[in-house]
Image (cartoon, rainbow, N blue to C red; front, side):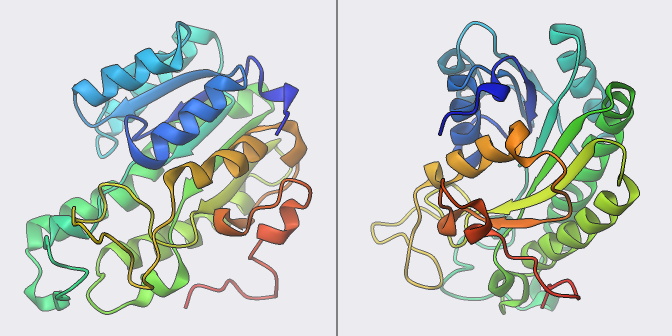
Length: 267
């Protein structure tokens, strides 16, 4: 896809060192965006991805569950490039925090470790809030901005053995609709993007026959094209929408849109 409006745009991607975040970062940097990626802490993966993104890229160790760290990540983007155009809330924790066999032997919610439960909720719910809360004032001052919240499939939100990961994404999607309404008319758009199935990332335990609950496994680069489009001027004015990367068609973005109807489809 050719999106000249992405050239020079400043994009902050949380959890950008690996998996979906890395793929979206590479796609955006390749289109000329100036990219800032975060990781929860310093790591070889964070440094390596930053090098792969090119000379303009910036990496920062920032735990999104900390309001101060979220604010510093946004401040780093603005200090480095003078503005912040796009925030992609990708950082999160999955069910491996609860069990390394969650996808074969479901853990009932009352069996889950309370500390692991808290950590997942903090990362997947509070993290995007802290980041958006820090980014929105800058975007409002510019009169322009885009927030892209990375979610999961409806089935995962209510699948047995997937709490609290699945429900945390249901919360994020509901919050995204509220944020979009709160920001209506400001020039700041809020949308949801999800792969549309399990992807080949560290959210799944390593295995020779690694696959999702539906038996399939999507490549993480499936997020590249829709992320580019959502970060570009082509999506200006579209807000409160939900896009499934698996259904993406460059010539028809609406084919991947899945938020039609009067009521939010959460369950």
